[in-house]
Image 1 (tube, helix red, strand yellow):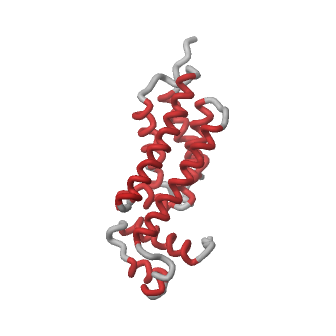
Image 2 (tube, helix red, strand yellow):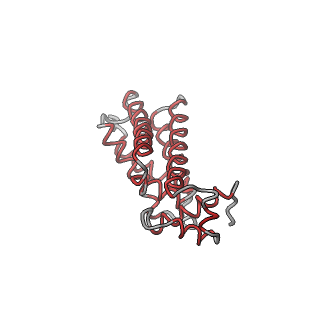
Image 3 (tube, rainbow, N blue to C red):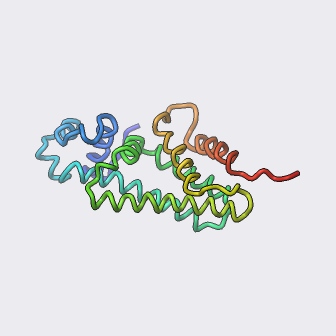
Length: 196
């Protein structure tokens, strides 16, 4: 399937993401990106000012999508289990939609410059807070066990983020099936055992 891009800059960012994912941000150069784009390095700078600009575009575009999705889930009146299922489904969809970008988002964000790094960390914390809110909802409903919310949220995120290491679009499970299986597994540990 041919990927369609809104403009040349979007195409450059996508090609760079594949390179950063494969070689690592530090090892990939603007010259490498230009070669993969089949253009002169000087022409590349007409669209992109630096590698940092590309990294910023990748990390913040995905972070913004995660924030939008978790806010949407927490704005809807559902129970804790339903909210968790929705959050995990959305998280899996965002990661699997563009795997190279997802890899860069999860692995290379530490290369952002100081100001951007601080802003990015705030978005990560905001997203974790959203997951903790879901856990609190489940505990308030007496459906989830009393857990250390921070620890549980980090475990949930680790489990979901790990899919970029093994997920294959042509594999046996689609993103929705992956999300369902992951959530079922998480809920076995979270759900309170009800007395007979």
